[in-house]
Length: 388
Ligand code: PMP
Ligand code: GLN
Image (cartoon, rainbow, N blue to C red):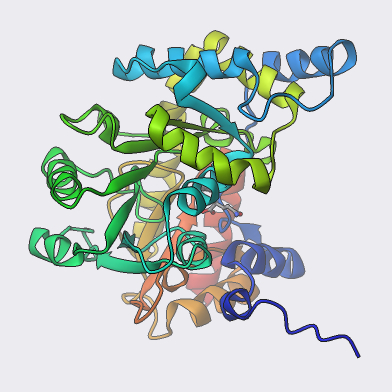
């Protein structure tokens, strides 16, 4: 008999909630407002660019740093939106999605026993990746229902072993945009403890209500201390393309590259080229995306409020969160299942975004869906609630 116990650490994490909720939705034919992926796909010009490039250009391994055309476009993008001045040859790396960028950053930067400050609720890959690097996550909890950050609790999370702060801003699943005071406090602590801030900014263009995304890297003293991560999946609503980018000072980027070269080495050249085309030529598309999403957020948010849920503020991302307690005594996991089976709509239990002792009264809904899909979901939930 083969010993198939496998890696003990990974065995403890089971299967990601995005896979399990999507499978549940498929099994029951429900409207899937769980896993975050949009219905409306990105610019047509990128798809034709991709097809043309694939049939006429090289499909062999690009440089492990990524195609120069994309690295230059990433540097231009950072300059256009944030005034950052990146040297594309020494400070920009292309990765296979933000997930690989996170893995390469953590594996490259961390040693066993190092501590990583993370913010709960957190994206589901964070704790497994930190632990696979042999490091120790130290969670600072944002307080629901307004996701406030207690600055004394933040300070208490830092110590002698703090090596990295892993910050997701704008934040999944909360839809929170960290404000200037919060960013400033994190930056000050990172400097005091000589920590690197790994900034997962995949939702940088999906910010609502006139707010503006501020990369941590633009704060005083933080240019050399930040690793900025982006994803074409979110910028162009094509999550399956899995082209990500890392921007960091040369000293940091070179240690991240040591991990990247053994994780994937490189990323499909045709996809890289098409993303470069999009970053430069489809600026209007991705700078107006937030307006389209905001209308979807508003529609779904007010429908869920009419159904009796308490809808929490969402300032960004694809997601809004509701407090289910006005509607049910069940916990989020059980309610997610019942809502799928009986109500025909699937969300994601927010407890899945905690390492321990999670609140059990919050459910995340994804609103980056076509209006008719959202209307279908709302219709189903209305009928279900009426029958209850
Ligand atoms: N970080 C966050 C916060 C996310 O929500 C996601 C999900 N898309 C990722 C990283 C992963 O991005 P990618 O699909 O580019 O790997
Ligand atoms: N980021 C997406 C979400 O939060 C899902 C990513 C995934 O499926 N791995 O829903």
